[in-house]
Image (cartoon, rainbow, N blue to C red; front, top):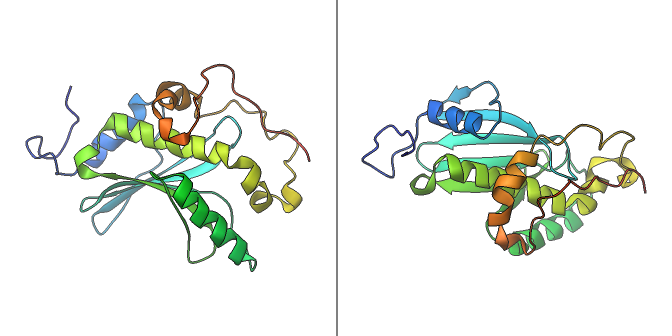
Length: 193
């Protein structure tokens, strides 16, 4: 079944916001409240990986670009940014389908962009799974950004991961991450170090 779009005859036409919301529901996700400004529409989600929990993700639909899946990796980092910038640049090289950057207020961001020509529900699910799995792979390196001393709080791994169905469905298609995604039980993050 073709993806619902504003003009189904034009593959470069942007999908309607309702289409994005429908795709999220089909992926088993509850889209956050829709925010619209100057023709750009956004939704907030919070998803969990097998290791990284509570990952805030914003989907941004820009009709001139496509969909941007934007994940905040950590709160503002403070003054020691030189090492962080080098790390983000290295990750930009290691994860070619993802972009790492820092917001104006110092928060590190992971983003995946989907151009209009590829934008459908399947690609949205694949992009969300990519973001979750990258955040999982970088969990040990980003822990010091999340908690003082990198110490994971007690009970952090307790809630069931909200992204597990995305990992199970789309993980095997993410070969660019350099490892086979196992579909078995999720591995819990280390609780203390």
